[in-house]
Length: 598
Image 1 (cartoon, one colour):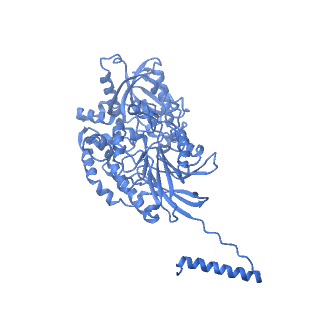
Image 2: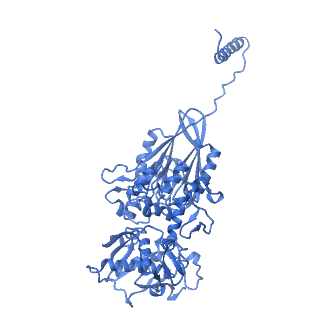
Image 3: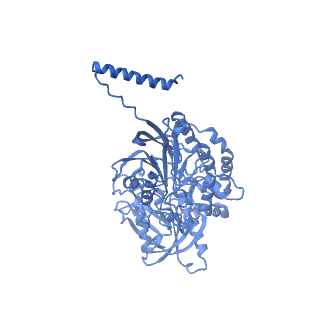
């Protein structure tokens, strides 16, 4: 019976070996060591986005034109799709994964429209544009962000149902059972040329601040323990389940800081701490902080190994690439090398498949935001609002003050004076002279905050103002004032600086933080520390956002479920004409040794 080719070769090798051995007995020859087999290796790439905030198109619905900023960034999933296609073409689609780190369904009028105007929760309602786009692009998993909870759990659950990929949240627990309310992780198998799959686990972690910022939506329904605690619980489980690579998608910045003070025993921006404290993690996709981190390495204290972190800015402006090189050792795949980098979405065009897919939704929202709701007798802008008391911020405060006074009328607290806080959320917001549209009002108040009334004393309001005034860089008298360097001291964002109307005061920027509020008065007299006031305040601040003193513990006198943005729109519609001369006043100003800065 003839030998097959493989058997023939093996037989020939055996005969050859026998001949060599026989010959070797007569004439010893130098031994040749067997060549080691080359190690099996495999490389793959995990792509990541974060803080997309409802951006599909490279479009600004607040200005109704193509998005642009000082750095000429572009935004949107249509741009991201082009980058993803390029990476998949270069690497091979089966050698890639695509994940996200949260804050997906809030932030633009596109996402607002399908949560509130034509909600995805209505019977026979639409599919959320972010779900349609992400499904089409082919996401493999996404972590929950805190803004996923802004519209309530029913909207989030409907969005979850519409996604072809899992929404992950290992530290989003059912308040009653303390079991995960969402999938904690997803497991992905990548086929290699060596017959041994690589198992990649993606662990999703969200932000414990949800318990504060969306208290009304989650209290009694879900709880949100710390990221480090839950990562320490789940990472060993994922390894025991055979995960060769563990990636964390964390809606949490890397700095180790919190914006809600000591109200929770958890850290808001904990990604770096997770990397440092929990062994077994290879990489972390960072979100929440809206910063660009191409690559940041953190040494794990227990294992001594580096964990690679990356954050791709926000709104689809960047795409993170985690590149992994693996080697087969002792019967398993081991990460030999890992690195990260980011791609810039302004280097590519929009994917026409994505823009075509959602063109109808886009046009509906453009028509919606251009609806006229009233007129203004003068143009107003936020360009100088971070350092001057501007009429456009007074507009927010007069709407809030009148709304709270009306709500408390006839009740126990009707006789108390109402003061109001407002922030400059955008330095490019404007109310034009002439027709006012929905987009103008939405641009003034881009967040889905609601309104509350809290009971405060004069002394507490002074503490509140001192805390707010930390926002300014200390600038001695006589030194030129550069507005580009005056604000955002210690990284404090614009939305965490509050101007308060109803009081008059000066902020002396020559003095150290904590002793800057001077000439604080109410109705022309020095403020009585014991006097009681009603503070009209947004729910983010009232629930502890920004860690302002006293307000979170202050008695709540009233709250509203409608967005402040809608309250402003309704106020403008009721007035018909907005006249800044009727409400604008200079309640506060920056000074140095009593001399006004501006």
